[in-house]
Every structure is written in C-alpha cells, then in structure tokens.
Image (tube, rainbow, N blue to C red; front, side, top):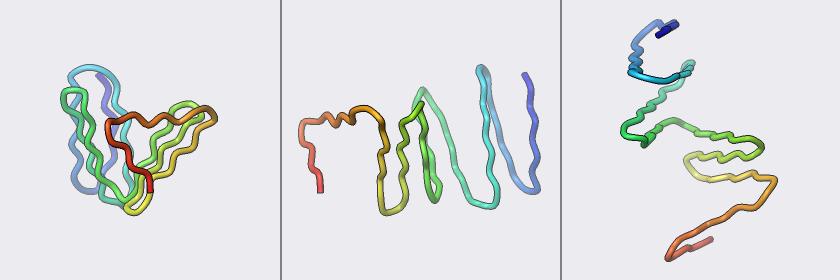
Length: 79
C-alpha cells in the first residue's frame, strides 16, 4: 500500500484493505471505523453524496437534497 503523511504531532493510520483519505488541520478530530460502523467526533461533520448534504453541528442538523427526504421510524418526532 501507499502511505503519505505530514504531522507535527501525533497521527495514527491503519488500513488492512481498501483506501483511506484523511486530512486534519488545527482542530481536534476523532474518526474511527470498526465492523462497518463509523464514529466521528468533531466541531462539525458534513457528509456529501452527489447533490445531497447532511451537516451536523453541536446545535443543528441540516439536510440539503434535490430529491425527497425520507424519515422512517416507529416513533418519529419533529420539532
């Protein structure tokens, strides 16, 4: 595999298969993946898939989507 890194302090990266791209500058970021589950801790998280964006901050969740947004659940509360 290929590893390219630049760090002034600590960095730990492990990949037994597949591709990883990770970049952090100045902020504390924790990103873990185990058994297909992702845990991320940051001041703000933004996920982009095509034209859809999910943005999570400490006080809001914003969804931008050009198509429909579905919320499924036995008990769904909005507001």
